[in-house]
Amino acid sequence: MGTLYLIRHGQASYGETDYDRLSTRGEEQARAIGRHLAHARLDALFAGPLRRQQQTAAFAAEAAGIPLPTPTTLDGLAEYPAFEMLKHFVPMLVADDPKFAELETAPTPRLLDEAFKEVLGRWARDEWSVADARREAPPEGGAGGSSVEGLERAAGFVDRVRSAYDMIIRAARSGARIGCVTSAGPIGVAMGLVFGLPAERMIRTSIVVRNASITELAFRTGDFAWHPDKVSLVTFNTTGHLPPELVTDR
Image 1 (spheres, rainbow, N blue to C red):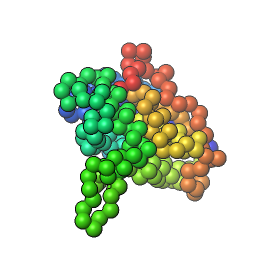
Image 2 (cartoon, helix red, strand yellow; image 1 turned 60 degrees about the horizontal axis):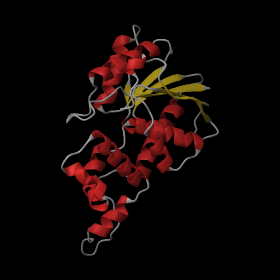
Image 3 (cartoon, rainbow, N blue to C red; image 1 turned 180 degrees about the vertical axis):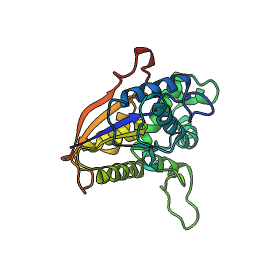
């Protein structure tokens, strides 16, 4: 059996214009991850391409005290396109539901969180193509109901993440211990793949994944694609390696 540690990046700069970087607390969380990984005897380490993922791997390596495997960047471990979703769909959300009108005038953290969860849920259910078709007539000779051009859909996101996990597992030797620095979304996908959940439930699960948490999976090694009978959940969303003051949800 092999072991796969899915590590959520440290706290990003939530609420700031440049979100995709670790906050001061996120840097401390990443260092705590490194001290924990020093005892994990990793054979390989992967990291998503986002800056907050790369920084988490770097600060972890700095604090480990022993050399960690050089991280391999894997694009499939990137998060779902949250900011693109908000950019395109918040105006539609405001038009659909008056309670979100204040997003354009006096947004509060609570209202922003509620709006994000609503946007995320509709995206996960692939409802946005329907809403977009109601508001915009298709071009002459074209068809309605298509998603916003270039925006990754939920099914595509799940396929991308699954392909990354498949690649990691296929290449692993027997007994390998592998770390993956990623984000909440790909960890939610892993949970869905373990338990056979639909995309909507995978995305919903991702909402509860804490910053710098570690989820442990056991998998059978060999040249096979991810299958629920060959991958098992050991622990989910653990933060025991963090002091209480560093446990954060966002």
